[in-house]
Image (cartoon, rainbow, N blue to C red):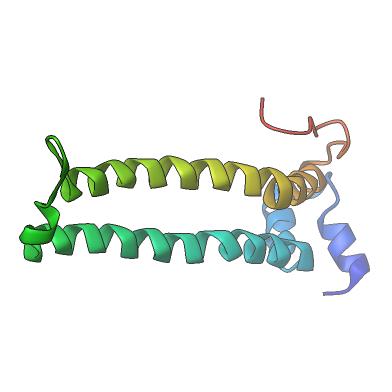
Length: 127
């Protein structure tokens, strides 16, 4: 698609559906998807592997999981707590990553799609 055709299609006065279709062919939209997947895919694979390890060890390595570390705390309890810690850690890491890499580009693309001023909508972070 030529730059003139893309600009005409992204004209705020044009049809919203046409503008959205044109945005999908914009290289910045591809960059946005790539930057999102650059975080989401490896972190998801890592977390699912970590969770699967916990489940498999709970089912098949009961001896290891029942090992008492101190008092009433065993390996299974520590693994379970670390599941929550890693979930919150991933959420915090994603929020920071999105603030730096994803949100600015998404805000620019959204502003262009809606015809809003790009600098007025940016607050420098989440509210």
